[in-house]
Image (spheres, rainbow over the protein chains, first blue to last red):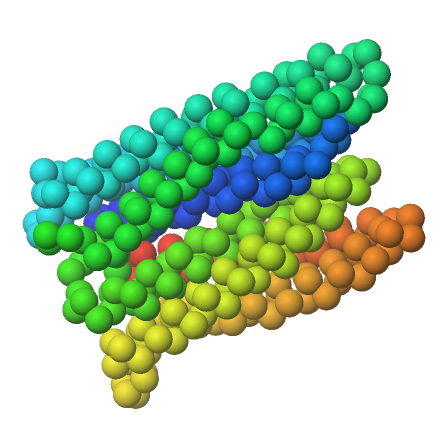
Length: 158
Length: 152
């Protein structure tokens, strides 16, 4: 196995980690959807550390090993159109995903504040876990990831 | 993932490959989410159910799509007409099919676990389901490495 084989394997594993994290965030959104009590919201957010680590590994790994491959493999170059498209989509996916996280984190913060007082249902909390802005941003991030996969496989212009 | 993402291949291979890789990514995501939810749920019935449903509604469809895509591209690349398969392909078949069996067992055990949960019984069966989902996840990560690095 050559170094490029290893880099490609690490690039793929990073991509899987990135998508897995995105799916985990969707699962968290779905699980928290009907939550009104602070304890329920905080229970769902127990998944958050694993998803956060996965998205960090995936985000950094895909771009690092991806650019490395584009430089290392003679058939491709970092300035190829499909490579640039992938980098732009990666930035969109990361930016939108990070903002979605900030939106949904408001629910966790509020749940932590409320849990010190009581565990009564809160309509405000229910609204925060169903954040429309958060959903749209996470949807945009997911769409960008699907487009990256399409770009990586079809390689338009290559 | 025959003939890696990093190379140019005939256009007719692209869609099967997309199904194969996309399905595998969904499967890995469902396994990670399901296993983690079952691991961190504690006494939260909502999170335990969420773990089981992640395996059933996310990982299982992903695995099915991945396996269909795998067979499709295997045939497209002409490996079905070849007398022997490369090592990396053998690893892929073994881990993918063993993973499907493990996931199926995890789902059956988990379904009984969720039923017991409704009756207020313990979470032991869901713990078994969690272990099986992490074992399956580990097998699939080895597969991803083999598909990329192509040992042998």
